[in-house]
Length: 111
Image 1 (cartoon, one colour):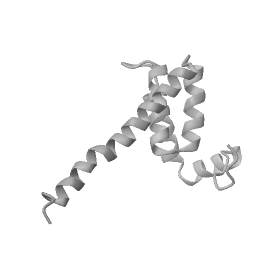
Image 2 (tube, one colour; image 1 turned 45 degrees about the vertical axis):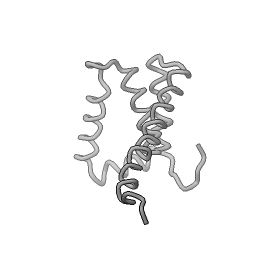
Image 3 (cartoon, one colour; image 1 turned 180 degrees about the vertical axis):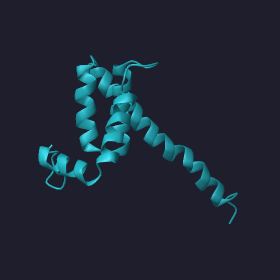
Image 4 (tube, helix red, strand yellow; image 1 turned 45 degrees about the horizontal axis):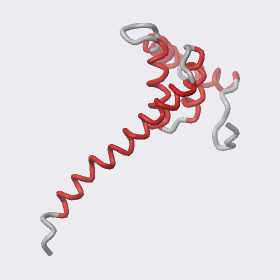
């Protein structure tokens, strides 16, 4: 990714972020470590979920990082792409479901 509007996470900028709010930074890292640890879901499944969510939230850093993490946990390209398609369906499904609100707001259609 080479989008000039999105800064790369250099050591300098990461350290500056941490120095501005070290408690929050440390808490977030601990939270992240806990969330992605082996548990009721295995690490690979958690990373596939993260890949899907990263596409819904449209975070380029998250996409890159979690695709790499999913691969390192043994996820294959087909599994990663399938997770992305699940995300796409869920995002499109929200518009589909919310269309009921628009239909309701239009009333019975008798003008």
